[in-house]
Image 1 (cartoon, rainbow, N blue to C red):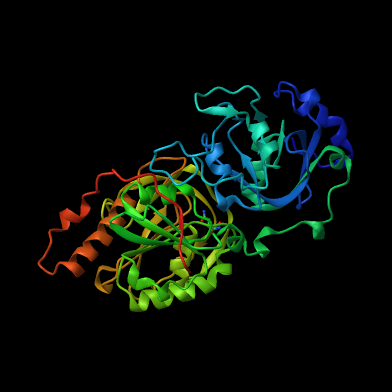
Image 2 (cartoon, rainbow, N blue to C red):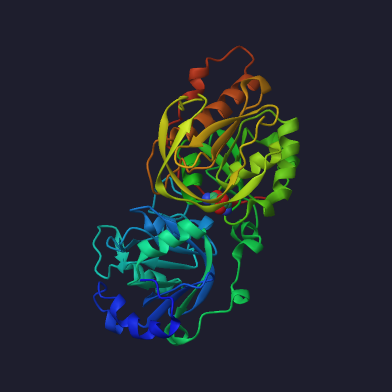
Length: 437
Ligand SMILES: NC(=O)CC[C@H](N)C(=O)O
């Protein structure tokens, strides 16, 4: 319920948390938006107040993956799905002997600043669950609010756009809302620098094709998707100048990441040099796609409310690998910024995908005539969670890297199909090995 008059909040808040089974034992909480609206409910998770950027996600599942996605850093995440927490939270440690990268979720901790749900499930049931959503939030020092009308909040955010907010918890819930100038805007900070690895490290060093990953705040399933297809992966800090070591690699990958891509101009300028002087395959996802676009001369702009959810339809405008022009793919997304569609596109580049809902650019690629092999997609083919429609883009990328490697090393024309064969996944658990910068 939207509460315009703040003095009514304390009185009304008692009634809001009626779905939460022990609402009477949960302290009050209020979500304030910088635009003047306040929503009263009950607190769960950590009993602390925070500022953040309020965004909504339409995903109906995978709250654990979304909350550990580093791209949600600094954000107060509103779930439009009313019941959140019913399958609990799994153990986040990688099972022994898997081909995994150290965690089962998308990173080691909850990354969003807070969560907003209509009805938090205190009772949970799933064979992998080890704790409740509330207990997990508490352990991660992340506050949540329940018993609020998330539909009303979402309609507001759709109309006025992503809005700065404050989740006031406990005694703070009875205080007046912050003044507009008191709201913290996470996008003024370089969140990528906070989310990226500080030092390079290797995964699966015995892989047959060597891929460097520029880490803008990489989701674990991106690294898993490369490693499980047999790649040896070196993860590099976001502003590492790949040009210094590029001869050692068969391909370059640029990851997702939080905040405003314009903070990553340094990485875009390094990449511009790479693209001018290096013809091996390059693939970028979300922030990585935006950095590729900026390197190509496109502009990244802030959307009104972005796209967050696992049900975003995108139309392929060109065929490439497993992607067929004219087909619509349902995709997982989490972004606030997008590349501007400009006509003409920079020389050597073409649009790859377009969003069927809002016509925003969902992908770019190098043209066949350019002699380059570069792809960027705004959506998440690794889809954790979400549909697997575009997961084979990882296979396509590694196939191109293998083909390039084979052509370089074996001048007698190797059939392209040989490069598409994914090596048997017989390798040991990938080791995290520190490597010199
Ligand atoms: N998931 C991402 O990589 C998001 C990219 C960027 N932070 C955006 O919001 O647009």
